[in-house]
Length: 144
Image 1 (tube, rainbow, N blue to C red):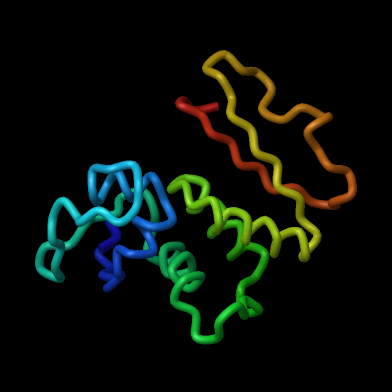
Image 2 (tube, rainbow, N blue to C red; image 1 turned 30 degrees about the horizontal axis):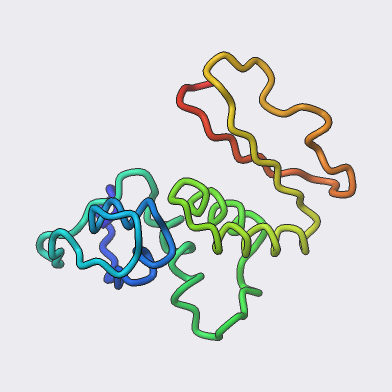
């Protein structure tokens, strides 16, 4: 359940198979194929606090797609939202997929992990000038 109250029935398989973040959250291990540390139900759901239901629904459509491999219904902004969640939750294959589709739409993706004392988030040499627009993923432990 997202913190705005929307409930989703999602199989943990995709999450524990694809994401170390979710492997640790749901099983307590750093590798896939371990049982969940707790059984969640509709009356006792896992609460997702860092993603709203609208963006979570988009993210789930990557896995629960009615036409295998067809993501034509996603806009560039949808892919940015999906990429943001994949980055936050450590879904490397979904990140790659998001970057691929954003690239097809004319967007480049710049990833940067900044230190506590950074003053410039993106350096000019990090920008791929072949893309007219850039999407920035910044991993920080503090607000900038």
